[in-house]
Image 1 (cartoon, one colour):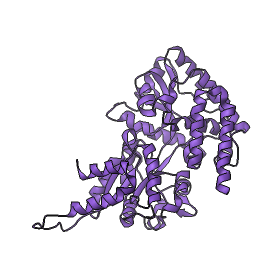
Image 2: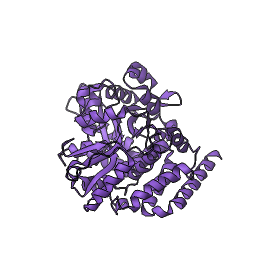
Image 3: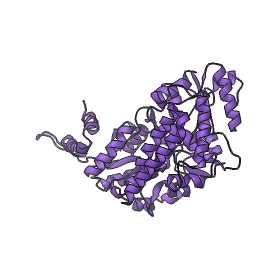
Amino acid sequence: MTERDRFRKCRVLFPACAVALLVCLAWTAGCVDSGQQAPAVTRKRVTFLHYFSDTLSGGIDDMVKAFNAQQSSYEIAVTPLEMEAFKTSIRKTLEAGNPPDLYSYWAGARVVSVLDKLQPIDDVWAAGGFDRLFSPMIAESACTYEGKKYLLPITQHLVCFFYNRSIFEKLSLKPPATWDEFLAACETIKKTGIVPIALGSKAPWPAQFWFDYLLLRTAPFEYRQRLMRGEAHYTDPEVKRVCDLWKQIVTAGYFNADATKIMWDTGANEMVFQGKAAMTLMGTWVIGSYCGESHNWKCGVDFDYFMFPTIDKAIPPVALGPVDGLVIPKNALNAEGAKETIRLLAGAENQAIMSRGSGAFAPNLMVANSTYSDIQERIRKDLQTCRFWAFNYDLAVPPAVADLGLEAFNEFLEFPDLHEEIFRRLEQGVATLAAGEKR
């Protein structure tokens, strides 16, 4: 087992001791026998804890490799964690006061929840001229908190439908543009014995995309913002309409029956790949998976995409998805190296590498169009028709609220007839959390 392997194993089991262990390993790695001469230059390590693991690992390793090849002073030492394990680890390491030098993190409410334990990056932002690299929309919504810059964006993912082209072509189906067309397509697919919509929410977050889009397609964007801030209620007519529409497709049998028992990647995505299901509502990170060695699908040939259908023509279209970024904790041991890492990873070349491997759009505006595949280019054009960009539910509300919401969405999938009771309890839970914060 290599030193890095030992560090990764210990990091997962004992996150509070990880940085101390890493420092020890780095020191011993630089030691030599008394009869040997030490190297003239030793690169300092920048420890990096991230959640781009397993199916989500596309792009990150290549980007880190490119950084390490560029640098003579610093070397990124990476520790990947499964997403749910990462959520626990970031809290523990920040609270213990011995975090790594860099974290990946989701822009939005997740950053807000740990803002007091992060250091701003305004100096790097100004020195690197980042205002010309990133759009005002991304800079303000994803990077700026309490008037300061805290996050460097490295991916921008869109949630949309991905479908098996072979199934659609055999049934002479076109990507639906309206809700009625969508329902008709689902019914046609179901009659063949194929599952219309694959959903895997054993890890509960995929179900949220249905709540998000049904709300964004039937209520003004401003209402959704108010709901996320706790200024509107889960018992409102707008939410009830979402439940009615969602119940319609659940009770019609358009989802797989085991939706809450299978994973999004090894379950739902594989159903689409194997032809057992026709489509799935998921983020553009599946592009990297479907086009990778494990599947070898070709974009536009074996699979394709379409935007979430229009339900109410009076509601302007809104795009939904996460922005992943990098943040520096206040207690980073190598803050200087972390800032240099951020400066380089903001560059067009590194962001293009991340984009190619992950399926995401590169937030850096200077990344050449030739970087993107045909499917990414078409998605970018569709995005130009969207008036607003929304972070998905669990990144738009505080983490404690997100936990309640994700639990409610999965419970809804199991018991759609009880949606009024489920969302009434969700409203009570959110109100209790808000009251506790005020005390």
